[in-house]
Amino acid sequence: MSIHISAKKGEIAKVVLQPGDPLRAKYIAENFLENAKLVSQTRGIFYYTGLYKGKEISVGASGMGFPSIGIYSFELYTEYEVDTIIRIGTCGAYTTDLKVFDILNVENAVSESTYAKYAWEIEEESIAHQGKIFDTINNTANELSLKTKSVNIHSSDIFYRKNPEIPAIATKYNCPAVEMEAFGLFANAKHLGKNAATILTVSDIIPTHENISADQREKALKPMIELALESAFRF
Ligand code: HPA
Image (cartoon, rainbow, N blue to C red; front, top):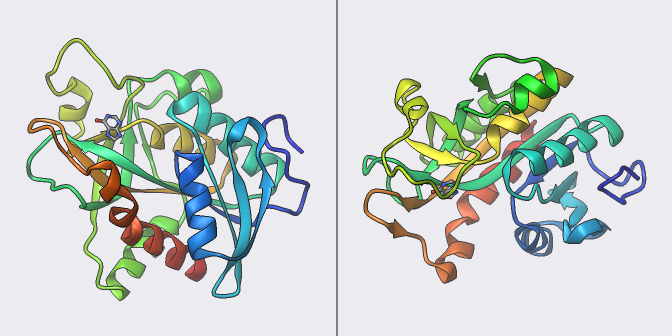
């Protein structure tokens, strides 16, 4: 047990897939894992552990934003001896160069957030993916003939903001899209010497307001889920 996860020690695998949404974690466990067991449901944040092609993998939610993913990833790394977290999420594209359903493997997460500074005295506004799981994801995507793009991502504290222009930090670091968690995950992994990656499916094109509809979402996320599972299996 940790403060926010009620699984017993040993009930969580070394590799964890982390979607934002607890119901997505449930969907993945029920549809992609064998013998999936619910090991925590504290605060409705479901964690499951099961087998993928015989390898033990856990899947559980991060919630939204740095405070939430900061808590769950820290407790997974420090209290459950998790080595590797693969965040699987959605993002909004700042540019029409990206299309809905595109899959991104995050190289660096950049943020105006003070999370890394005040948590770990990491002063940089850009934090890279951690360890070799990023490369495994790219190699796995090649093997599966799944097109992915390696990009920098803007990790923002803010979903709704007054100014509709692309934030300066996103332009500075050449970020074609925005989400709200990767920077917090990468900061924790960097501080703790663990592995972390983030795979994102483009769900919204911000300038055109095009988006993946709610009923398309389950099917739309399937390639990303399979990429994450196959990468976890190979890692
Ligand atoms: N902003 C931030 N996070 C997101 C978005 C967005 O437009 N779309 C999906 N995640």
